Length: 417
Image (tube, rainbow, N blue to C red):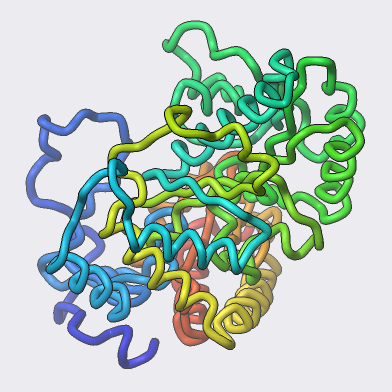
């Protein structure tokens, strides 16, 4: 643990596993759509969170891969504070200077020519779906409106995005799923090609399925999807909401495979904790997105784009992504050692960069709760996987401490005799 990461977050003299829990019951005024841990955090700095009574937790959840620079990063505080003294919101009825600057910077750093700003990953994915359909409509192919998508995907919680993933748990109780998606097994090229028909507009895929269980697509398969789209005149739509903004050690995960998409959904790390999403696209792909075709009241407002610009500049600084890669390699080695020590608990270590998961044998909820007892925060995922998502500026000492705490949590499952 670095001195800076602990600044202002001193532990109580005798912490207990239950001291961090709120003494009162959760408020009935909040709709109970989340199975929340009974923890209330008051402050954070770097990779650490603290409760009101001073209990300190090592945060390897990062707001579900959102807090790319950790908590209370000075650069983000400065950007938000400076903009807050000027103007917060003016809507998209007028030009927004910060929005234009961030869009230009994103285009300079990526394949994209144009950017549409929204507020979340779900909105970014929904916007990407609309863009793909609209592209073919203005190209004289209105019949092309369906997307090939993949089992295990998670593109958001709107009616269209839950339909695009097809997870029965997310669809239950909301009527007939929105039409327009042909869902095939992840990693199966033949199935993807077989799903292409006269109504297909594109293929939508996550380079790493985070929510689905940290399932990493091979570079060869992703490049083959690119070739499929080129051969059939389709748009390749990437969901890099979780994998983007340096999470895998490149600015965006597809860079590892050496190809470019036509459309890309971005969010989470882009705002470093402030709500912002974006749809990035080439001029050709976005040619149908003219005035009146899409919109967002809050999308790309001055506060969000000021913070987004600060995050982007930090991630693009020389050495930042190399640091992510180095820390990812170190963490992978540490987790591999834990697997060797606890083979009766850990089945597999998965991931790309600092998007890491361990497939476990006990229920993930038990592992997550055991980690909370050790004051380590983690995130569940599909396929009985526990995600470990540290901030991208995590230190080696913090990785080692997280591994130690995870190891302590795993000792609750003794090795069979």
